Amino acid sequence: MFVEHPQRVALHNEIHARPFGGVSSPARCSCIAFHAGEDLDDDVRDHFLSFCRRYSLTPPAADQKYYEAACDGFTVIWERHAEFTVYVFKRSAEFDDPFEDPVINLIPQDWLSATPGQLIVGLHIAVEKTGRNDEEISRLFDHNGLTGSRVLGGTAKVWTDFRLHGDGFGRILIRDQGMEQLQTGRLVQRLKEIEVYRMMALLAFPLAHCATPKVSEIDTRLSDITAEMASKTQTNDEETLSKLTDLAAQTEEMAASLNYRFSAARAYYRIVQARLLELREERVEGLQTITEFMERRLAPAMRTCQNIGDRLEVLSKRVARANNLLRTRVDILLEAQNRDLLASMDRRVKLQLRLQQTVEGLSVAAITYYAVGLLGYLFKALKDAGVPINDRMATGLAVPVVLAAIWISMRRIRKALHRADT
Image 1 (cartoon, rainbow, N blue to C red):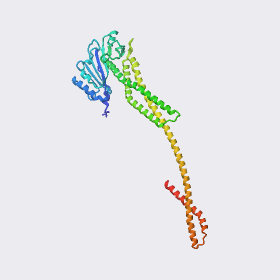
Image 2: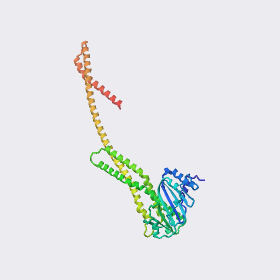
Image 3: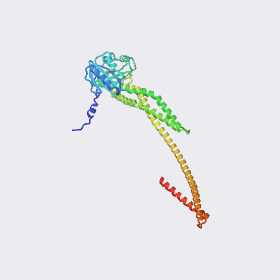
Image 4: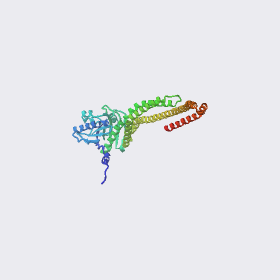
C-alpha cells in the first residue's frame, strides 16, 4: 500500500534500544565501563559472546548494541557505545552490608581480566528498604564527606561520596521509600549513566590542562608578530609570513586533535545534566545534592575545556586575519615594485626609440652620401661622353632629391614592420 522508508522500522525501534528492566529491592548492582573505541568493536563483541557461551545464553544479534539476560543468580546487561562499553551485573537478594561481597564477585575473574579496553568506571549500587542511621551510612562510605538527596518525589533517598574505595569501585546507596520496580530500575540506570557520562566527559579535562600552556605560547607569539607588523620599522615580510604559516599549522593541528574530545565532552555533559534533572532532587538537611556537587566540580572542568576550545577558535581566526593582512601588504609592495619596473621599462623604450630615430637619421645621411657619390660618378661619365651637363651642379641638385627619396622609403619600411608586429 505504501512505499516504506528503508530505515523506518529501525528508527521506530531505536527508542526501545536500551531498556533497563525493573529492579526489585533489596538489590545490588556492579557496573563497570571500559573506554573502547570503534576499532575494538570486534574484540568487544567476541569477548561478550564468550560470556554468553559460558552461561549458555542466546547471543546478541550482529547489530545489537544492548543486551540483557538472566544468568545463574544474577542478571547481566551489556551496552555498546561508540567510545565505551558498559557491563552491569545486578542481583535481587537480601544483604546485611550493601557493599560487602558485591555481585561482580560472581563473575569469573579470567573473563573480567580479558575485557577489551581500559577501565574508566567501577561502581557498586545498593538498593535497600532498611532505614540506617547517619552513623551507619557514614561507615559504609568510610566516613567520607557525603552527597545525597531525596529523589523522584521523595520515593527514594540517595547517598554517595564520589570516591574510589579500597576495591577500586565507587559506591551509591539507595533507600527505597515506595518505588515501583520499574522506577527503581530507571533510578539505578540514571545514577549509573551520571557516573559513566561524568567520567567520559572528564576525559577532555587532562587534554585541556596540557593544552593551556601551548595555547598561551601561541597567543604570545602571535601578539609579538602582529606588533612587529604594526611597527614602522622595516620587517622581513617573507620571514614574518613563514612564522604566521607555522603558527597557523600548529593551531590547526592542536584544534584538530582536541576538537573531537571537546565535542564529545560537551555531549556527555549535556547527558549528565539531563539525568540530574530527571532525578528531581530535594535537599536533605546537612547534605550537598548531587546536582550541586556536579555544578561545583564537573562544571568548572567543562568550562575549562570550553574555554580552551574557544581560545583555539579565536586564535585560528586571528592567525588567518594576520596572514591576510600580511599578504595584502606584500601584494601592495609587489604592485608598487611592478609599477616602478614598468615605468623604468617605459623610460628604456623611449630612450631606445630616440636612439633608433638618431640611428635612422644617421643611416639616411650615410645612404644619401653614398648614393649621391654614385650619381656624381654617373654625371662625370655622361659629361666625358659628350653630354652637355654640369656634373657638379647635377650632383648638388641630386642631394635633396636622394635624401627625400631615402627618408620616405625608410619611413614606409618602418610602418610596414610596425603593422606586421601588431
